[in-house]
Length: 199
Image (cartoon, rainbow, N blue to C red; front, side, top):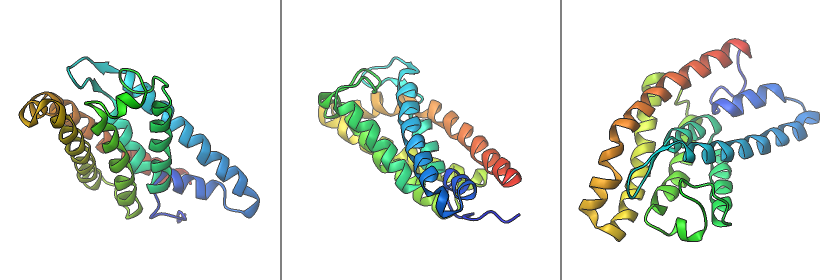
């Protein structure tokens, strides 16, 4: 069976094949809202699963951000990250060490901004068909991680200097993020294979 929307990201492909009629448009909208809320919840949980480092704790957020981008697509990923940031800005403890505007403009705020750039960028690549093989997934994940660290380290360097930002905000996380990329390279093609077999 040919999957409609095969060039769409994973989640949008599933929804477009489950809700194909005009009468299902409300169900489709509710599904998208549900996914945005679930995505922001997963980001919160992943922020709390951490290994303490100073000034930037090691969390599972990078992996979740990248997978949201690759599976949600541009619009849905953007909405999810924006909701997450709004929750944090309102003071909800959704970030690794709390919440509030002060957290966003603090030393680690650049990583959060990196999420907002990285996830839609990976969503754009997913719209082009990336993520169905481990090769395209790997390249996309490397691009996504690079964007997060570029913004995060650049922002952190304002507070502690460039050399210290590299030593404390990049180098300790390289091995863990390489492992996250491996996980994503296994997860995305497997998910696509399952979807293509079941739809």
